[in-house]
Length: 163
Ligand code: SF4
Ligand code: SF4
Ligand code: SF4
Image 1 (cartoon, rainbow, N blue to C red):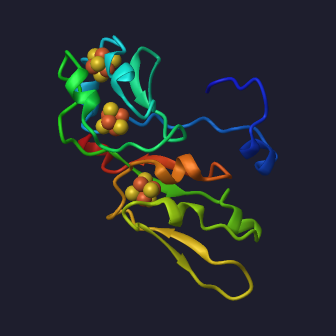
Image 2: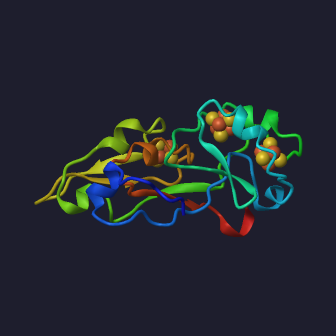
């Protein structure tokens, strides 16, 4: 977990420390191909969205840092063949109970930013509309997790046994 010098707006909204994030990978990186990563950082420098970093000696994608556009620059930059061109994310997003709506606060930020319309708002009696994420439509781009004011959206592995 990265150490934060100051409390973020998300931390203040949540009223408790930031949780340990899962390790998300760039698109087209499998668990097997990741083992060839030398942590050279060339993909990190190539990413125009600045969402890649090296952690614990391997490349990782920060789902809170921004949206992956699947431009393929990271794959083109990697000299080790770790990142497959036109590859998909091994993760999908999941909305946790930290969602502001669960606390009765209306928010549609994730629905509004999703480029795949994978998030819909379910009407309910006695509270604001609840966001629902369709994992089959989610590309793992992280636009929603980067935009969520409550840090309530996290990456989980889509098919753990095959990635
Ligand atoms: S595909 Fe493009 S935007 Fe996505 S992580 Fe790679 S370089 Fe960054
Ligand atoms: S360019 Fe390839 S080898 Fe270098 S850090 Fe990125 S994934 Fe690892
Ligand atoms: S990660 Fe999935 S749900 Fe979130 S904005 Fe991207 S496609 Fe939509």
